[in-house]
Amino acid sequence: MVELPPTLASWLKRHGLRVDVRAMKRHPESRNPTLLCRDRGGQRVFVKSAVRDDPGIAHEQVVLRALQSLASVPKMRHAAGGTLALEWLEGRTLWELRRATKPCPDEAIGAALARVQLEGRGAVSSFGVRGDLGERLLWTSPAFFASLGPASLQLVKQVQASGPALQSLRELLEGETADRALLVHGDLRQANVMVHRGRITFVDWELCGLGDPARDLGMLLADDVRAWLLPRDEEEVQSRAELERHARALMTGWENAAAQLGFTPADDHRSRVMRWTAEALLRAAYTMTHHHAHLPQPLVDAGIAMLEAPADWSLELLGLRRPGGGRFGRAAPHPSPLPAPQGEGDR
Image 1 (cartoon, rainbow, N blue to C red):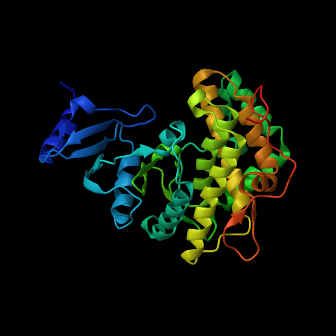
Image 2 (cartoon, rainbow, N blue to C red):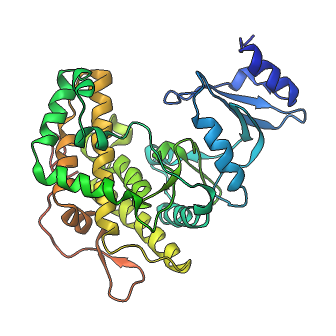
Image 3 (cartoon, rainbow, N blue to C red):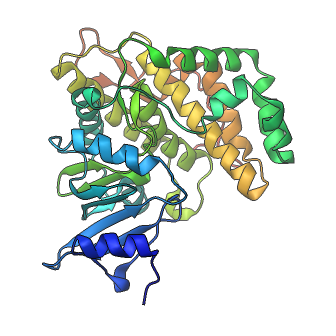
């Protein structure tokens, strides 16, 4: 028997939902409890419930209600207060597909992301990602410094020792409020992209708002850069060629779909994608220092190098756009600013 808070148990009963004990799961990175339930007809339903008055799920309810006409967001079944019931999504996450060495529809993911960012920008009026490391690195408070362990402190010192990296980060964050802001997911890791029979669905919209569309692209690319530089296990190992292939297909899909919808990104869009990739890498490194007291130096080096020379990284990972628009070819030979994977050459 599963022990549930009385309010949640009452909510489930009121909506005709029962917990499927055999398949109940809790995502290890989720802040809030998640349940696999069944409705009266036996259909599976995914339920999220906020804890400690977390405002994220209430925000997600409002946004998803406004986005229900879009194909790339999950459909709501019930929503009230701090509890949200969504359709159960079949398939695998992009993270799982990468590890299973299955073909990944990167171009389709990029196109779906562009469409939801453009078509959904009227759903929100503000943007605020909680816990942005970039802001803490730029505007460091005594309280933040006091909270750092030795490994975290070393990370902060290395980033702050690079004037060009800090200036690049400042320009990135100050440009977040540009007039051409779109809907931004805000937490678009590969684990939050579901793929099933041609349908691409982006899940976990608790941090979404208006912002720089390059942020979401950078966060997705950071997962691939991390898998190349510092894979967690053999299943995650990714070659440099695979990294480039994924990155260029994702960008091709995004830019072609944006063009079809009449949107022209800023001239520095690709450089901003690289800077957001750097921010995501540094955030991942900071999380590792906080939880494991270990400094993942390859991620820190890549983050700093990417902030210092985003144009070089853009050429290396995304290639060159052909004059007149359209699809993208491989870049001409270019000196690589990327640090090699720890202890290895290019795989």
